[in-house]
Amino acid sequence: MSWRYPLFDLDYGEEEKRAVIEVINSGWITQGPKTKEYEEKLAQYFGVEYALATSSGTTALHLTYLSAGIKPGDRVLVPSLTFVATVTPLIWIGAEPLFVDIHSLKYPNISPDEVERKARGAKAVVFVHYAGFYRFIDEVKDISDRYGLILIEDASHAIGTKIEGKFAGTFGLVGAFSTFTNKNLSTGEGGFLLTNDEKVYEKAKLLRSHGLTTSSYSKFTLGDTLYDVVDIGYNYRITEIQAALGIVQLEKLGEKNEKRCRLVKLYRELLSDKVLIPFDDYENSANYIFPVVLPEGISRDEVVRKLAEAGIQTSVHYPPVHKFSAMRSRFGELILPVTEEFSSRQLTLPLYPGLSEEDVSYIAETLLKAL
Ligand SMILES: Cc1ncc(COP(=O)(O)O)c(C=O)c1O
Image (cartoon, rainbow, N blue to C red):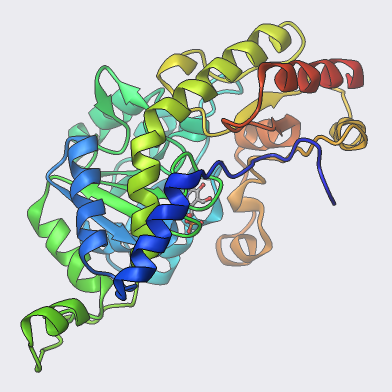
């Protein structure tokens, strides 16, 4: 299918091409000096002690959970309105995800009241900044502190979201991010985690590469020959190509997020009378996606079809995780009424920095006509 307006369009320029060629010319393409430079730049940008780059957001989350001390049997509060990868690494560990409903259609982040209701006996809570919005992070942090829960952020949607000068992903013990192709910072595949906790960082770093005491790059540069394996780890390393892309993309992040913000402002002006637009504070959001909630009684399938006829790709963020077959067979038939209603009426419109204001107007008008 060729879309006039895809949901997302990659926004690479000459800088990314040059950065990749430079890595190839260097002759070293697996994790090495570029990765280190990328991590230092990430830590500096986000104002944390440590950043660790990984092969994906999913592997960043797996390392996050392991290094935060999540163990088999631990109960971890998670939203169901998220990408499944927030949850799957918990299942790999043998922890027990406890799905928590969202607050409301207007504020579809995890509900603080529901977190509090389920907090006793839980080990941790995972906060996902849906679409890039931080709403309730303070409340959930407060509950975590009162109940002794570990606060973890899956900040994959919130690369650049700021809460009174502090970045999303830096509120809890660890913040995990995806840099999958459609994210605000795009490296094709990739991810990273941020923390101020040295032990968490060291553990995640060790597990990223098989629990090895040395790396191929230090063997190459320092001549190390022998090594020990001091933990049972994984290969979650990033390549230098991804790291080089990440460095360029980080430089462009502020400017690209500003463009997203301008487009979202226009979308909101054009659509807010006719559809429910989640959250208010888009100016401090990374605006990863532009979700709307269709009026009750409208056939979403029909709307999707009409938009598709006009060349506009749409999506649903998200089918609830607790409704997937693999989850139902594991955890039984759960009911999260607000998540389910949101998911049944939600539609995501195209959003990426390459869209123009005319494009947004056309997409918004087409949606209004379809309604
Ligand atoms: C909220 C959330 N968590 C985790 C992930 C997984 O990231 P990745 O695809 O890089 O493994 C994504 C990716 O889309 C995501 O949106």
